[in-house]
Every structure is written in C-alpha cells, then in structure tokens.
Image (cartoon, rainbow, N blue to C red; front, side, top):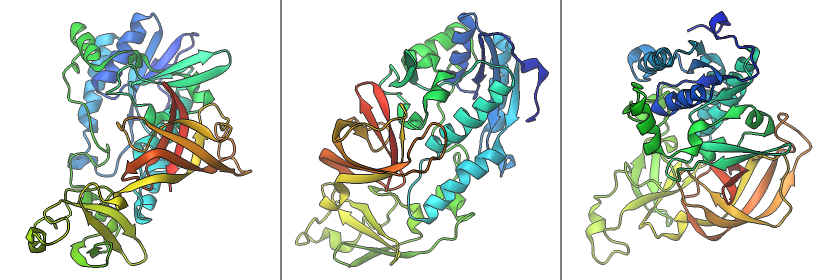
Length: 388
C-alpha cells in the first residue's frame, strides 16, 4: 500500500467525500449511503500496523480485500494508504509508555484523535476532498457555527466515548452516516444491496494485537517484572507476572481462586472471587480483594488530566452532568467540581489543557487510571479526559 497520491482518488467537486473503508459492514454501509445521496464518494483503506503482519495476527490483508471488493461493488475509487509510521509514533509509543507506568491506556481513543481524524483527515483534504466519513456510531449536529458530537441512535453501539477528543474543526469535516441507524438496520441494508460484508463478524479488541495472547505480545516490548499479589492487610496470596498484565476490577486470570484458605468457613469472605483492586508500583505489588462489593473496588471521586472539550470551552463550575468511566457503562450522574487550567496549548482544538476533579453521586466500580472519563449532557458528548 502506497502513501503517495493516487490520481484516481483525487476529488475536485464541492460534495466530495473520502470514506475510511475498513473492510467491515459499518464502513461498507457508510459508503453505500453516501453514494445513494449523490455525493462524489471515494475510499481508502488505512493500514496502521506493519510490525508482524506476516504472522497473521492482524487481519489487515483480509480486511483490505473485503474493502476492495466493496469499493468495486459500489463502483467508487479506492486504494490503500500506509499510516503505520504515524500510528507507531503517536499511538503505539504512548500505549507502551502508559503500560510501563502501570496504567491501562485506550489506544482506540488515541487512534481516532491522531490517525483517523488528523492524519487521515489531512490526507483526504490534500486529495481535494471536502469531508471524510467513517463507520462510527455517532452523530454530528451543527447549529450556526457550533458543531456538536452526539451519541449514535443505537444505544448498544454508540461510539461517542471513543470520539470525545474531536474538536470543532474535525467535526466540521466529518460525516457519520450509520450513526443515524441501529446495527440490525445496517446489516439489513448491506444484505439488501448485496454487500459482501453484510454478515461479517464485528472486530473486537485492539487491532494490532488481534487474536494473540496479550501478555506474550506485551512482553515483546516491555520486560515483565513478577511480584506479589497481596491483600490490603499485606498477606501474600499469589504471584503476578507483571503489573502491566492486570487491570483494576479484573477477576479472571488472577490464578488465586482455588486457595485452600478460601474454603475455610471461618475465614471472612470465604469462597468469594478475587479482584484486582490497586497497584503499588513502588513495591511492585498487586493488591487483591475478595468479593465485588469490597470498598477498595469503588471510587466516588476521580481526577482526570489532558482534558478536551468538544466546544473548545470548559463549563462553568460546579457543573452537573453525566459521565462514563468505561465504554458501554450506563451514564452516571456526577459533578465536575474543579478545573485547573494551564496556559499551554497542544493543538488548535484543545484550549488550556487541564486537570479536573469529578464527584459521582454514587461510588463507581473499578475506576482505572489510563482509561478516559467522558462527559455527557443528554445525547451531547461534552468532552472528557484521561483518568489519573
């Protein structure tokens, strides 16, 4: 796949759109809907990972072939573009640094910010396109000069959580056609118009890891440091192979569920499952607790950094809204109580990068450093930040 300009994809009309065609059903129907609207539609396939494609872990080759067949079926110009160097520098390097620091990053959020709605957008505009389009389940609403990021119509598929870093400029240049539909309707349309991806399974997980073992993959880039699993009282109950392999709230994979002491009826919490509750980086210890109701698994407040507001402006405090601390979590009532701003800026869409304090109406399970807290007011995504 070449990164050079392809003359077949160059657009010059006022209604030209380049679709990020991933080889999945959502982006396939995105291209279909835009073509049905009479727009001048082209498509590209973004290749974001080179490291070990030939090992078959990342299904890029299969996805490229599917995207190519969809473009042929819809009779739209198409080619592949290699963004792997940018992905490595701006997404994967951050992914590794966060795990090294004991946090659990969300590379999908950073990929959207740095690749799909920055590198891809710049590339598309340089080709003469007016806008880009992707298969995300979200919506953009314009009122005057203001652009709003809205949840997708399908509550089960809404992806606004992964898009909170978008600002006014990328929103003004982006279309999300399937955001107006529910997933079953998307598949129905794909089948009706004989798109080969109509019954293709949705991709899950992190693209560059694919179906492989996560611990083995991570150990290729970061040396593992085994240590103790301990209770809050300091009792050693097991061994971990590296703090980076565990996330807060984790139940499966701890390997300590069958301890003989758990079967002692006199032992407090006997028989209850174990959960990862905290990480002690200095001692290289994973603090584990028994029972999902253990207080160490819950937080009523959090702090977040690298704040981004879709509108470009922070709200006046105190500000009551709803929030998610992980994808698919139901909206939780909260109050933003404090925002500490900086005079620095990181890009044109992020004024005054800052920290904030958030207080929830009820305690939240497994609030995880490195993940994002995303704020909502009704169906409007306001923005968010990275949990400290």
